[in-house]
Image 1 (tube, one colour):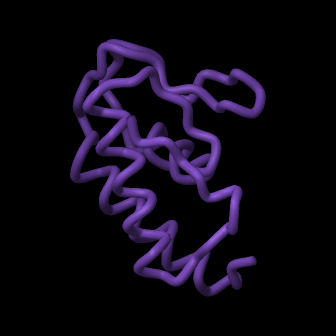
Image 2: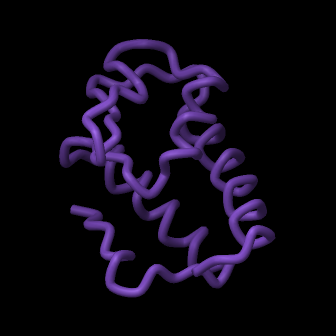
Length: 97
């Protein structure tokens, strides 16, 4: 289980990375919370800092239809977790496809 410090630095890095990738962009697909189906970012809406914050808070449960966006988001998450020494064991199996 990650420490508070690890999670804080991971979330800071994800905020920066997601912002560089997505801030002020419009995606043609929804980003959902896989745990409850909640809409995190609706399709075709400019992604604001508020949406980035929601994505970072729910980064472990982001659900996106298979696409280049999904691949890039999940690769970013995996790289950040590895960089900060965070592992969820078998639960870390985020599918990049």
